[in-house]
Length: 88
Image (tube, rainbow, N blue to C red):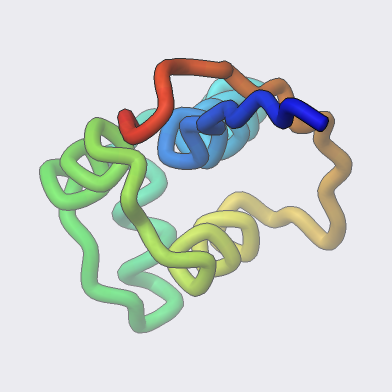
């Protein structure tokens, strides 16, 4: 049986989900950083932007952002991009 291998770009998927929530709630990276700081999480507008640009943030950061945005729960659909094997 021939199996086709596909690669899912999880960094893009994580970035897309978090960015959608930020936009949905009408926030900027600057305001999100201020809300994170108010929770005792030291992030700057630049550090948030860098993490979003790379898409390599931790799930802890994702949860902190959700809390800072006032989310009690979140529903999302995974929309995966399939690319060449070995690429991220």
